[in-house]
Image (cartoon, rainbow, N blue to C red; front, side):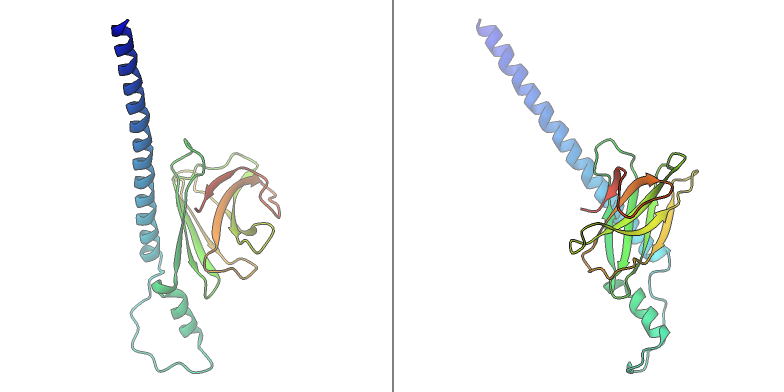
Length: 189
């Protein structure tokens, strides 16, 4: 009887350790995914011409800002927000996605890697989520390179959005819609 009690206690201890190790593994995987997405966001920022080009010192700004001055504001890395997106479901494809968002100009770029191509008759749709609106705002249809799983979409939503806007990607019918109907495949925290 004592041996059975001891064996049961050992089994319960090992089972608890296994659950703890699985939880730690999942947290490590999430941490790695976060680091990869941050690295990808940095890559997007500098590789895709979002870094300001070296310019000679400008004259003090006038009341009528030129388009060059406006583009300098748009490309100022300090003014950009990087929004990382991840799958809300465990076991989903390991897509890495980010939106580099310029709140001052209400423009941005969505980019992704390892995004599986949608099934025939379906498209990925990008949405901007702002709590002041009842439904997410359509921000673009995402075309995916079927060979590489890469996607890059410039976005300029039709409504003004705050700097703290969130984004999500859903899988929709080819004709799309005014609100997400399909499953959410990527979302910002």
